[in-house]
Length: 111
Length: 111
Image 1 (tube, one colour):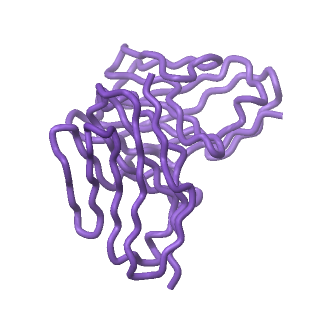
Image 2: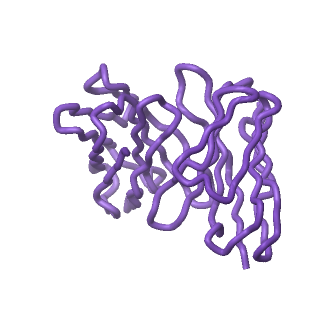
């Protein structure tokens, strides 16, 4: 198993550009989440999904969209990038009865 | 909503000593408390978790204790080794999915 795979690992965007952060897991996990990590603030939940076709908002959802068309994939879309979205983004997945496994992250810089 | 405070922010110990990191939470409905270890440039790794129906859980050199009345939980690492050096995050949630993280503790273990 590859676990949770995030692509790209690094990305630089200009303000106003859009992009999609990819997340895939090969463990047949039902639950998936996106977090952002900023210095001194820990990790904050952006969106999460309890299964294919079901998504919900977390603490900081503004400026981000998600969809869950398959069990394996949970992409995060930035609609119009802003400097405040400069962060490290982590995708995570879990199955019932177990805690989350995190990917290795995408470091995003918006200039 | 839930708020998690974590102390200390940095902790330095001599190899072989014990390390203790403490977290407090605000929402008495929280029932799941995981601890994550994050090494530089990597995603958080789940090292131990505890649910509210258990007061203590151990796994080799690490243990977590939970005091529901006081709404705090702690991570204990015994016989620390240089490879324990990392940033440790506590988290709390009501339903396992919407994790609220503390701000992290940077642990340094000196040989």
